[in-house]
Picture 1: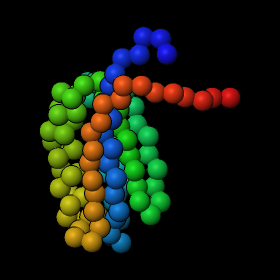
Picture 2: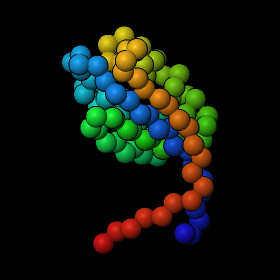
Picture 3: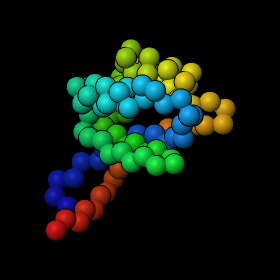
Length: 105
């Protein structure tokens, strides 16, 4: 592991309501927008009964700036109003990644 520099991961875990109209489009828009943000490194996502999206950032400041982005704020509000409710939920965790291992064929 040469020259590894720690970075941060934002883990967004969620379940959705039945009203998912517009969700995929908004998720794609947010991914495109995040890629344009300073400090963005990458993203992984998996969806089934529970959705998990992990975005990777160079610093806590970059995460703070992404959270405050006006279009991202709108997406968050829309999510709370339409895609998540008292029964369905989301959770955001921020972690520091100090090590990683990868296997490739």
